[in-house]
Image (cartoon, rainbow, N blue to C red; front, side):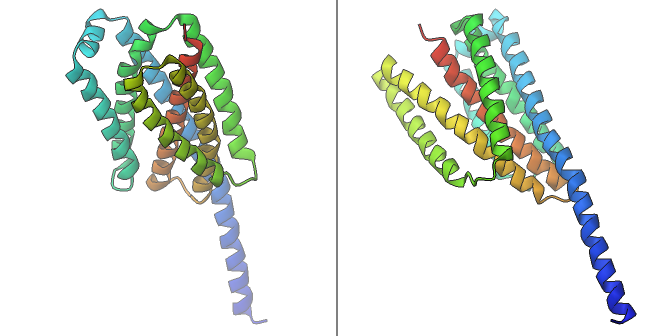
Length: 242
């Protein structure tokens, strides 16, 4: 073996080791960012919702006008689509600001839960949601089983729930709504595990803390945020049912 060949082998091994060390350093930091961003977004939503709920003026402004209410809902949809669909074109700072704005708008539209439901029902739903979310997030992160099939099934069920909910607007069936709520809990429990595994796989392929890597982490935080919020709302409809 020539000296040049030996140098190339050693250089390749050092390069691989450096890449592995970079992966080991970047991956935990990116995963922390996912859950830090998700937690901060949830806190921002909760604070906004409570603030609006304790302000009769803001509540009246939002819920006495269909234009304002539907404007908030459409703005939320637009923000989710913008963050998810254009994440590669957005800067990290812009994507973060959009996420913050979405969290605030979502808090404003969710403020009604403090009027509709009792404090006990809200606390119970939150505690159960946190427990279920945490357990499924850990499961999705640690399991070696491929959850892609489960994810596809949950997504199809989600579409079915959306259609069923629209139909029930006209049927006004309490029993049907109750069934939808239980299915919704199952769907977002499964989606939490699937999203957790998907995020892990995506971030394992990022070898540094570049802006692109952090945008992927931000998108993962948005997905988990949506999973938690929807899981909480469906459980609240079950616990708060009179």
